[in-house]
Each structure stands twice: as C-alpha cells, then as structure tokens.
Length: 277
Image: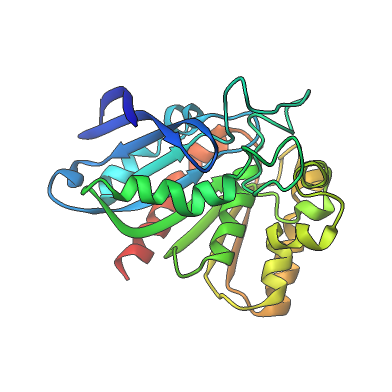
C-alpha cells in the first residue's frame, strides 16, 4: 500500500513524499521522490540519495537544493528514510545506533535482525517500488552523505551491475576502523570482523573487482574528519588497487548541508554524464 503525503511544485516538477509498506523492513517507510518536468514525457534515470545519522527523508529534500539540478538534467531523485521506524522497531540511546542509524546493512543480531535490513531495502525493494512507476527507468545512480556516503559507496561497489554511477559527501569510508562503524557493526553484525569487511568501502576497493569510478567530496574543516571519516584510507586503497577515485578536499567546508548544497550540482552533473554514456 502506498500513500502520497506531500505534493509540492518545484522547478517545473513535483517534490512528493510517500509512505509505503516495506515487507523487507516489516514497517511503513517514508520516501521523498522528486519528479523533474521531463518525467511527464517519458522514463527518467533515478538517483538514489542515502542520508546520514539522525536524518529522515526530509533533510535532503529541504536542505540540499538538489531539485534545481535534477530538473536541468531530467533526473528523478529518491531519498528514503535512514532506518526502519515504528513502535515495534528496536532502538537504542544515542544518535548513532538504532532509529536514524540503520547503516545500510542487514542486521544479523537480536534485537535488530527482524527490522534492520536496510541493505536489502535499498538494493532490491526500494528500486522495485520506484520502477513500478512508468516515469522511472532502470538506469540508476547512488549517492549519499556521511553514513549514507558509506552506504552509497559499499552498495555500488558490491552491485556495480545495478548502478551507472556513485558519489559521496563526507563518507565513512572505513567503518570497521572508526568508532561510529565499530559500534554499529558490533550491534548489528556481531563480533566477527570478517563480516564487517563486506560493508567497508576501503576493503571492497582493496579487493579489486569493480572499477566503477568514485567521486568523493570532503570538507577539510569537517569536525569528524580525523576521527570518523579518514578519507585518506580510501585514497590509499584506490591507489594500490588502481581504482578510479576523484577525492576532493574542499577548503573551509564542514559536515553540514551547507557543504552538500555547495557541490550537489556538480555531483548531479557527474551522474548525468554517466547516465548519458
């Protein structure tokens, strides 16, 4: 069952928000979908945006200013919530575990396993739901911020046949080596660190395989740069593996949506070029 709960004109298209039932997560999910004006003429490619810790679908659609660029390039933007929701869904104290902190993995440990299956939701269920609309093509890209940047990179690297392009802002590139990731992975996946590595972009690049080009923007004034993000680890892995990576350190920018809004146009253009290739 799907219900449209917001419908707003925006740059010649429509910014909608939907509530739909997720069988994978066992709860209702909210998803922001921007339809550019070109969607009225035929199917458009789809860019999936994965947000970071504490976010819902609202952060990206209200703060990033992405709709303007999506309208220019004829791209549908899909911004899901960051975790399962509802009274029956397990939660924890603090902002970095539980609701708002799904980390885009399939949890295997109690009490998280019944609902926290964000990897399957993003990779399979959400695209199937989106592509049931005739306005959406099966040409996909994926992008994200912070925890969502981690999700975008790892999902694209593990599923290169499903995505034409990938980019990230301030991603957690090596969650198995930093506190945010270690806390979440211990809770969701258990103590087996080998299982963690399947959701670690640095490790996935190091393993080789897909050479899907990566675009990463990182602010050099980001308060989490050295403790949680550590983009140099991704650069080192890409250099060693010969993986195409454009890592841009942007002077003066922090971890906020001011940073994302400043460069989202360049990211959408990056995806548009890949979609047109």
